Image (cartoon, rainbow, N blue to C red; front, top):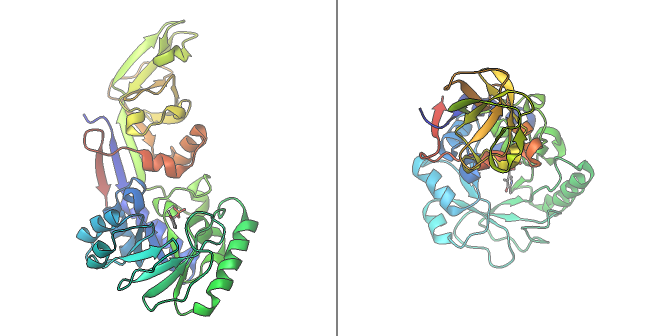
Length: 337
Ligand SMILES: *Cc1c(COP(=O)(O)O)cnc(C)c1O
């Protein structure tokens, strides 16, 4: 038996792409598949998103783009982060976001990034635009949290780019695509919602999204702790009464983070708490009775939401998803089409 299995449901990806396209009301959907598709698998997700109507794929680095290019010869691919690998990008027919001051690389389609308030990448003002500039972009800092600041950014972007309405103007991420119609412009770069994870860390069903990833394992050990006995490093969990616990062979090296202690998973179909210290390769769950070794455990999926794990860990769904380790030595990954 494998330690754990990750399943990615491409039907859910296609559903979420269609949901975003409906929200975008005519603007293009560009699927963001950086960081190996937020841990879901960039090529599979990218292909599914294109099948469902997305018209481009966005990644952070040229190397991520080259991996996509090998499998998707005709896809439009935009590299959103800064890069020195311009020749390779040209050769692979990529498009580049130019996110810093300085020279605009020639002979490759370029999207110029304006800083309208993110305070990270992008120019303060637009320069004279050479003919290979095909797009103008910016990025919202607070589309999930502060609509007033987002509105200011949208207005700055609108003003600065108004004279260039013939170029593709793109500003929205998932949170803006779903809930801020004014941010749509010509295209939206959507990542998190495509995976069925809420950009607001709420239940994704509220926005009509379907989680695509499930992560399942099993009990590899079941034992009875007597009062005063503990499980795990540091003795964080000490039994007050005779207590059955199960050990799941997944730990923080697999992406089940140490600060997720206390979160709920499904054990044999019932919600149970992870207790004690999550170790590198194992986590304990508190049971209400003796269960068989091999009993199924769902860490994510079947109603167990990434967003709840993120709440417990004091982070966002993005970080939980990107942190799931799917290398063959740790987990198997299956695609459901
Ligand atoms: C990652 C990223 C996105 C996608 O954001 P989501 O919140 O995942 O939709 C869009 N634009 C840029 C520049 C990004 O880096």
